[in-house]
Amino acid sequence: GAVVSQHPSWVICKSGTSVKIECRSLDFQATTMFWYRQFPKQSLMLMATSNEGSKATYEQGVEKDKFLINHASLTLSTLTVTSAHPEDSSFYICSALAGGSEQYFGPGTRLTVT
Amino acid sequence: AQSVSQHNHHVILSEAASLELGCNYSYGGTVNLFWYVQYPGQHLQLLLKYFSGDPLVKGIKGFEAEFIKSKFSFNLRKPSVQWSDTAEYFCAVSRDSNYQLIWGAGTKLIIKP
Image 1 (cartoon, rainbow over the protein chains, first blue to last red):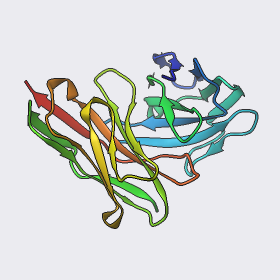
Image 2 (tube, rainbow over the protein chains, first blue to last red):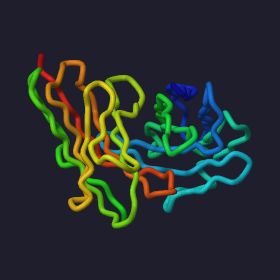
Image 3 (tube, chains in turn purple, yellow):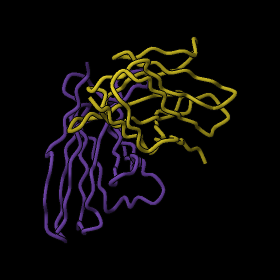
Image 4 (cartoon, each protein chain N blue to C red):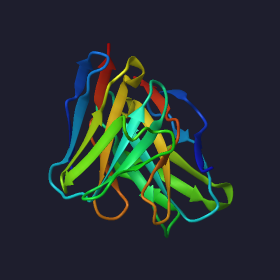
């Protein structure tokens, strides 16, 4: 089946620094990838839709200048959390659309901002 | 606004018990329906999906779900659960031609051996 990887799997950073998270589709090309955030004991919240070669579409309430998304190739999308604060600590999950309407999910990245 | 609700946040069952997890959505148009599972320490995996056709959908690992349009429901079932079914289960909905998923809050299922 289609495999999606994320790197890093966990990261700890200091407040004010920036962190980049990579999402890769390993054995298929994905023109569309999604970035989600999952708070403890809550469901996934869609942050943005990433389209290869064009600007990402952000959901209402998500700051595009804080969460920078770049989908530079058909197999890679990156999410950069800029000037991170403790409230940005969360579990970030990406998914990639493989044909049809099926999304394949990465294993997630645990971000802790101290 | 479109929403998905899962009735139970936590379910505890013994092995061999039957399982039914409820999922209801609020959207009057055509929808695609999904159940995902997240085993401890693993990423989300698709259990089954409904796009059209037979409203009774069979998925992996003996799971099935029934789409009842009149009730806006897509309940997940398994006749006899196993300890290895311990996981968190998420119902999700996307509007036809829109790939964005709206998620339920999830149900944590614990199977006692």
